[in-house]
Length: 365
Image (cartoon, rainbow, N blue to C red):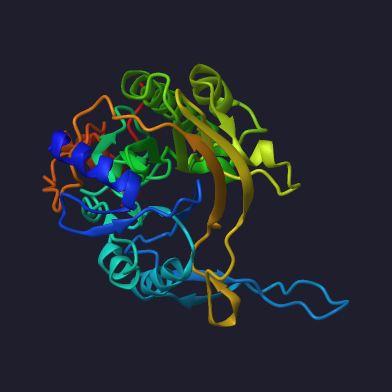
């Protein structure tokens, strides 16, 4: 397959149009720009209610009664998000938490000819996908080896095979860049000082996850250009500085938010990158992506989509790996071993009984 693709790429260098191994015609625009967005769309099937803060009249005081709530339909929101994605002038769009809404997202985002295919809903799927207008190759899903959080503790990170999605993207004929879309452990109990232990355990899990990601980058990408994007659940400016110490420094990565210096507050949705051998990236733009709201200015998600534009200078070069197109289907086995989590069902049963008052809490050992 690699030999066939190489022949096509040689022809494409002059004509800029080819038919790939999917049987699709695609055209590279000689603009030397790469524009993309990352967005956690909050596509959990049980996330169907949201709080609406009480409005306060000018000069008034906040109401003492609790916030109102309203119903939301994640499936309908995903379809609307897909339409917004379709209207954007982007090379690719990386999404997180599309667990149960992938088909609605994909149905609306029709102009992205190349896409990964959902790994499934909770608890079997990782919620990570890439929608691309450029060919993607060698798609790989890697689950975190360490995670923390169950139903009654943390942020339920052990209930899904969260991890990272890797692919090799062909940005121009025979010109490739490594792309990562990731979702790391959430802190969970941050808002409650009594749950400091949970926050610490989540930080330990995230430490192991970033180390695992660094190992993959060292093995697969070596000295080549890389882009990482997604929900890192970690700030750059706040302790314990895991992004800088475990990802940026070991891999020679730059943070787009830090480099842009726009004055926007730090956030957990990040984009890291580096130039590589024969591929020079230059940041041109970084900003929130507008228009991802429903009627009444309601946000689709508790996250904000961010748009990045790079210019690049690259040499023609064949990848070191054998090229393989994105699989059209990925079978998911709903087994604990399938995503290498540490979910302890005996512990879960004990916690459930404790919550229901069936037995006293087990002593710490």
